[in-house]
Image 1 (cartoon, rainbow, N blue to C red):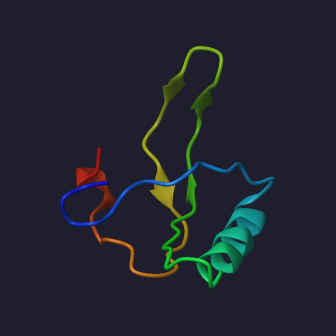
Image 2 (cartoon, rainbow, N blue to C red):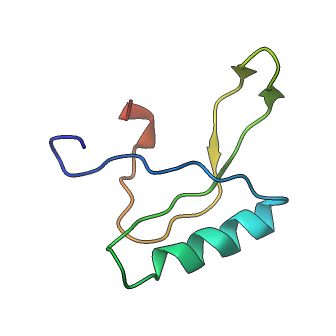
Length: 71
């Protein structure tokens, strides 16, 4: 966990952007823990591990405005 209390969670793959947004919203509402979710889209080649920059497509909960400064 980072000094500011923000830590990345498990990455989950969605079948579409809409499915990813809906899943992130549902997961952010779980009462088990206060969670924030930020679904994103990116393109690349999984076999080589070469990916472009992620584009945030939704924010649920308290998500930092500048995710690019996160490790």
